[in-house]
Length: 486
Image (tube, rainbow, N blue to C red; front, side):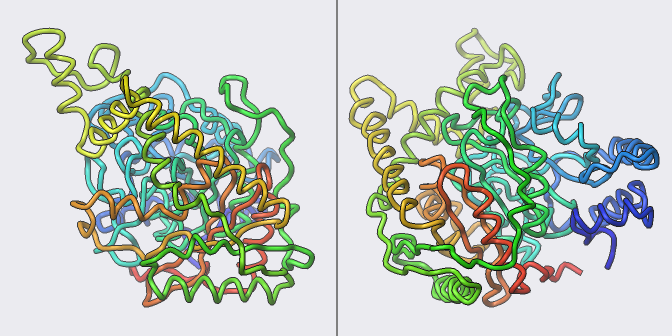
């Protein structure tokens, strides 16, 4: 196996045994980026010099006996998380040259564990999109078929893991932005419970929905990264102060005693037959592993989730993105006739079409005369959706659904049809609305294109989700398959 194909736990073992060095591993991954990046386009900012410096420090620490499980292992981070001294753009012209003076909490935590930072990954602008076509710089391509999208908004992070351009990455998930690209790229992606991972230093899109999580090559790696980034942070007012378990202890290869539900509303009209067949086969495998399956679960308010999301998320985006006015930082239009003209032109030329569309949707929903009819009503339906999940989790340890209703679609196929694009996240949106955790694991390659299985659980039940994902993974070979990039 080439070094760039290693998982975290494989690389960790080789580093501990001194069979490889972090510098060797980092050079191998940088060589891989150089080899495939012109086709995948997953990386916005490459920091090769910094990465090699990090690797050298890691080798010295390892030589002195410091054996942290992420020490010396190269990663990429989605470009909406602040990295001190390294450009953080949100894939937007508005922040094209912004260099943060501080680190996000997750970056601090990974640095404390000796990470090697390769750079930042491409994304839909300000995390608004489902395909990574909305980047102000370039679209990212799916390693399984470079004519197709990798999903979004964390498409660069997912594609980088699938293409072995990083051993692991971080993404953010507001309505499926970790899980949907993980499903599209045949990798593992976890959206933790809202409040489980600090959002301090994450550039805000929709503050009541955003959550940071890992994208990895297998479930054990996912547990290792979650161990590192989870935990209370007083700088994040939504962070929850509760103990962080060792998630790797939950990784056992059977599901005896677990009761799993299959909500019928997630097998939506128009779902591709190959997705339905792949998920049904995956559920039968879970049953073989000892789980009790109930195929007759109903979450009736699920059908309203898309509408609820596209009121709440744009409303919060409208408020959060008001700070980009061309005065304090970021892009500023220079040839304006007045301060108001400068403000308007900065936002006109600094934001892309999808960001402007969502700002307008949100501003309308929050405007006088419409607040009660839209935003307030959406919040009430949000409560109903959450209550239905709460009731379901009184009966079931987890729920099993598809991650996406389709296989990855072609670049440009849905670019002119926002509604069809929004439907790509129909299976993932309810999870963010309810604040519960969701895990996507590889579950098939129908026609050579990835299909993801989504595992949902009650608040702070990441251990259960990882156990289910790990048991399924150990009984199948999907996660071992590599895209035909070579």
